[in-house]
Image (cartoon, rainbow, N blue to C red; front, top):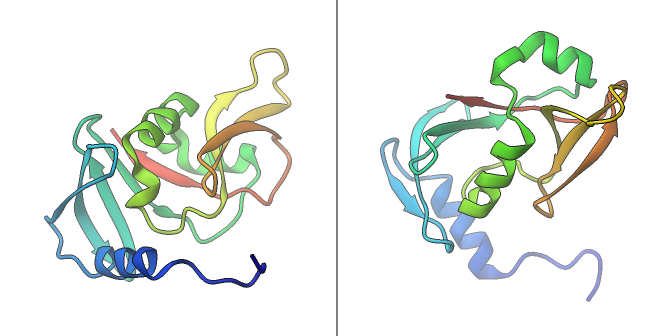
Length: 142
């Protein structure tokens, strides 16, 4: 497989369809969970995970250190547990702009210089130095 190989046609069609559904449309993931498109404004989307009650907003345009993300977004920054639940619900199938590393509000338990992150490309989590400024932010509404 070459590095520049494109996504399968089925994936491209699904993405195209999702980016063109009307606000209020409900989509079911392959994991059996439903998400409802609650807004689309200037190309930015927000989706409600009906099971958890969380509304996942589109990726913020800028990159942030963890300190700046917490300062700017506060309680809207998801916990690592909220990311893990959303991953179990299949949110990467629905939400746009997932191919990034996202800060969570959760700190590393034994060292406050690190925060937990979510890798949108793979659906995994890890830790990052809080002063790193190449991470993205995706907010939630509770």
